[in-house]
Amino acid sequence: MEKLIIFDTTLRDGEQSPGASLTIREKVAVAKQLEKLGVDVIEAGFPIASEGDFQAVKKVAQTVQEPAVCGLARANTKDIDRCWEAVKYANNPRIHTFIATSKVHREAKLRKNKDEILKITEEAVKRAKSYTDNVEFSPEDAARTNLDYMCDVVQVAIEAGASTVNIPDTVGYSNPEEFGQRIKYILDNVPGAEDIIISVHCHNDLGNAVANSLAAVKNGARQVEGCINGIGERAGNASLEEIIMNIETRKEYYNLETNITTEEIYKTSRLVSTLTGLLVQRNKAIVGENAFAHEAGIHQHGVLSDKNTYEIMTPEKVGWKGRNLVIGKHSGKHAVTAVLEDEGFELSKDEIKQITKKVKDLADKQKKVEPEEVVAIAREITHQLTEEEKYIDLREMTVTCGLNMTPVASLKLRVDGEEVMGSGFGDGPVDAVSNAIWDILGQSFQLEDFHLDAITGGTNALANVSIKLLDENNNLFSARAVNEDVVKASAYAIIKGVNKAYNYKKKIHPQDTNTEV
Picture 1: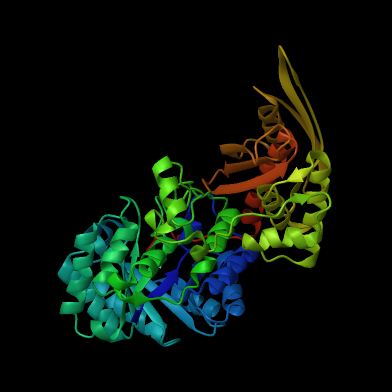
Picture 2: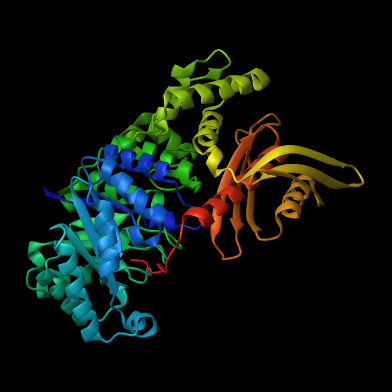
């Protein structure tokens, strides 16, 4: 069988999901799990975008051993040089450079004619090639680019030294038959195309990302790009776990194989969901909670008689083992570690110690702790800010509310080393706390989204609060906190979001990188 190269862009395109930004440590954790999964290429970020993104790509390059580590760069010298400075530490570094080729992008965004685009393509690929033989080129918005002109651009990229040419459906415009034929046309009409890897990168705006990717594979593409859980810009990218399991389950149809260890899929999915805060829908294929559930009586009867009646793959094949550990106040660090390892966590001894203590404290109050609560506590511990990152810290909080009275909250915050007090009224206690925080800090933030979950149900369940804050520059910051008390969890989440925003202002200097592939 031929090999299909799996290119994961969870850390680059996936992180561009609104509110899904990851710290350097979190990116490294995901990269290490992707290595266990067996992906061939990890696109770790966009090094020119910010100092934080540069350091994250560099750290991933220094950490993983087997996969190629890739950075994205626009087709200009500054981007490409910066990209190389980040990825050069990898065992197999790759530079991925791109420029838009569709008529609307050329005229409305770049203001370049066709010949200028061809010249820029040649120069960019040659510049990248001067650093490494592993060069990928993408004609952005290829699916809306004139077919023959796209082939001209692809040929220039090949002649300049690109070892991989990626054909992106940047806005999710194409359909499977059409997109498959586009790949076939390239292989039939571009000299040298058969000697390189043709890749595809599909977005899901019309829900066709996985189908388009598989149609491209059927027509000769030998690299597929996508994200775990299908996250990414707008409606997301092609879901890698769906593509992988299509190839695995239908080997006789595709006649392809991958390097993927499919038993690591579920763990990888859970880790990405946990760290980004983007929940996986219950009926999501492959990794959703209902993916292997059978409720209809006729289905249950069939599965009990022979699993092959309604299951074309087993839960174990994607690493879903079920849960059989009961966590209580007598549980130790080994049980806690086992639960978290199943979720993809790699934790230090100190973190395990902190998590185990919190689990025992919770068990003292509610007797039994569910795995979901252990995960929530672990997420809270691993998302803790360092003292240097705590621009704002909650010192005191009093909330008064009741029947026929307006809720009021009084807070004392430490703000940049000084203690400041403020108060606020609201429609409820959480609203009052929020207004008290803005009373102290000023209205430079907008609470864009507030979501509360009782992790396991019941009145004694942990409250899991996730929020999204918008700053004055329309940057979106997500944060979450867990606590037995809903109001405390809400306060901690909002303050964590504010700290993220202040740290972003202090340390990160984003440039104009609003172009996607």
